View 1 (cartoon, rainbow, N blue to C red):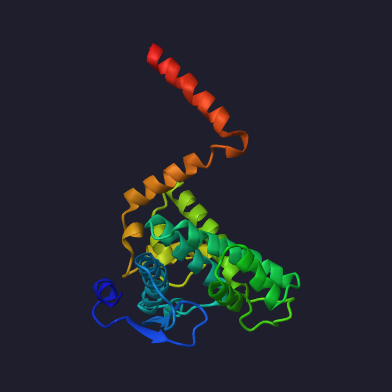
View 2: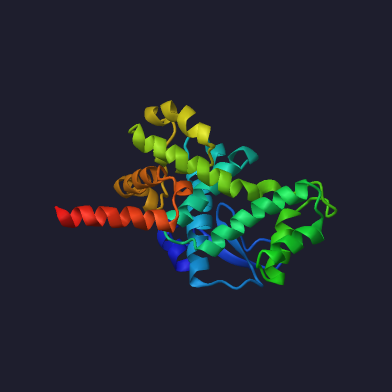
Length: 265
């Protein structure tokens, strides 16, 4: 990862270190990414880490710190967590760095958080992950995440993991509206610091006046607005197809009918 970080941020600006104490596989700060020393990483994992941790979490922290008038935008806060995780998860999707197993893990964590809040204890949540097909070690690590700082007997949870998918939906919807309403500058606002979704709109006059600056570090998928617009436009169109009224037999009958009509023309 280090050479790619050096190319994106500049040599030595962001470093990678191994940490044997982490419950998560990785944690990103403003200038350092910590990886769990006992974890194994594939090439796909590396791509996910770069897109999620480095090119979103680290980049927005550094962009915020580089603001000339409001350096607090470089600081994380609970109010910006959902947006941060939403951008980072969307980055994985848009760059082809997320496979179905990763998406499934995120969904299982949401269910596990609700389980814990409803009273399930550590063992019951662990059994839920294991029954869903995760290995024993992965199930244990996932359960650790849910119970960080919480009562192991149930009734409470560390709810950050529920923010990944709600954040993804929120950020994706904001970007679709921005493209629809010809407001492409909102994409840059998202990366100019640690902002909430509402901040990107409310602070727009300060960006327009130059009091707030656009992002210095912007990942490739967010910097080419033509590609981003095409992606979002297709996504908006395809979401209108209602799969709940279709099955394979109905779909094949529809396809056969149109193929027959086309051959007759």
